[in-house]
Length: 113
Image 1 (cartoon, rainbow, N blue to C red):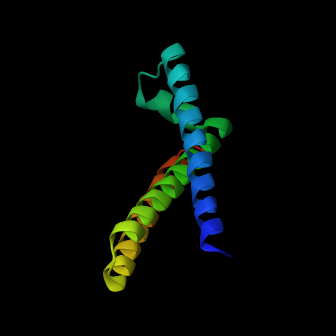
Image 2 (cartoon, rainbow, N blue to C red):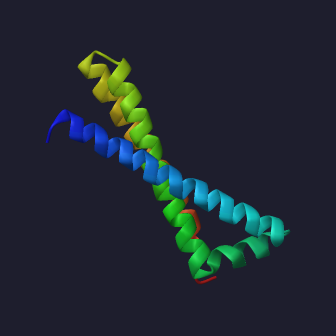
């Protein structure tokens, strides 16, 4: 695969994830303005429903992909030393991976309650 095609894939991934992130924020924002949730029990009930749960899980995954592609591109563009670049990318991957696993655990923990 050429370097140009690799850049196109990252560019498209950024656009698709940004579109889903914007759509999720818009839809949930309108939903919460229309039907606000005032208690922890209401939040749990909302998130326990299949559609909001799946949409939120997908939001978390797309947000992590979006962050990874963006930070990875910045590191690749501005960090010249290979060792530092690889170390930074590994650190970012660890942080995003840990954050993602924790976030998905929280989202899926309300299912079945």
